[in-house]
Image (cartoon, rainbow, N blue to C red; front, side):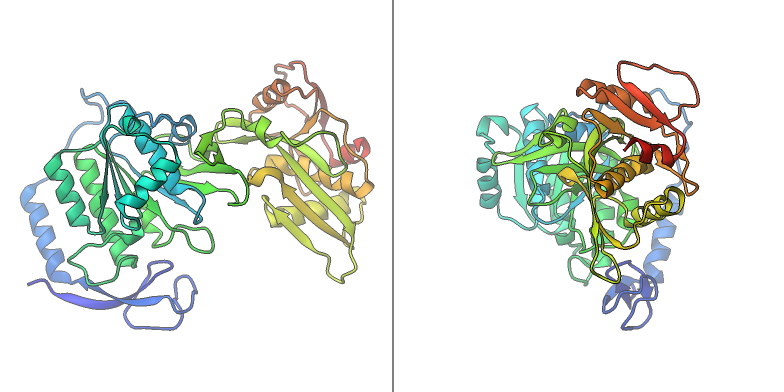
Length: 455
């Protein structure tokens, strides 16, 4: 008989405690310890005995079998974020804020795959079949477009795998959501750490044994992280996050982990009444509302994943009536803004200490690369002196603490994207070697003082 023991698991980080406490020692969160039942040493011994009896089959690194081709979802931006399509047998995890469009995107992808002749099974633990059909009707998915798309409502992992095994293997299994799934031989409630770990493990192992791709939709916490233990993200092959404000029409699908493609790749979508529409040229979309040069606004030539992307950075510097001036940042790193303000004051002689500073990346995009330093500095200086940069100018470059402007990667790709959208001038770091110049006039800087003089 399997022996069981009771422990207390943190619902935030997954750390196990032998007894209840008000505060988790691992993550420091309060009131997150929940009692759970785990299998004891007897079950582990049986598992080790079965493993020894079965033996281990070893193979060489190179074999004669060719990998199965990727499955195209029919949505270009989703395929781009996945690295070229769905790899058979892979496990994917999709997270995002409520109402951001996770279920909408997966239903659109499932319908597109099934229209191409692939069998797709969509299992929901949150909605009924009639509710899913209502969403499909709102998205304009007709009966002819969802030929081999099959729906089911269940929260029992054994029931789901048993039904799939009886009917044959689909190309893709969608679970909406993993927090509602439950393994029947565990007493803890759905959504707990042990249930999330066990349910995900069984679904992923089943998918890999039968070369079936599985997509798990996950809830997120108030901090924007996928709810549950961190091990959940280590178990899957690809982790996708939906970014963007629900009040804005733009949605960014970012691959923060991908074993079969480049990490940090993004797909850009526009939310409309008929669902999510892929955006093939996101630079033009992010700059669509930019009519003329305004003080405090500049265009940054960035790189997101493998694609160049132009976005508008807005800054407002104003006198502060407060003893401690405000620093409000949307779409960029708050600590990096504090560093840039200190460099501008110490190396360029600009007074920033008594002023409120507001910084915004237009369109809801979050910029993470340090190449945006030069553009942010230009926006701050432009707002401070109330002078706009010349129209048709883009910027990129990293700024060091000594006030030097450092080179960044993929310079030519940034310039080509700017040239494609009609920009004629670029303020860049000094290049270390000769390369293609193109038609864009380049103003090369080695020190931040040169940018202040230009503005």
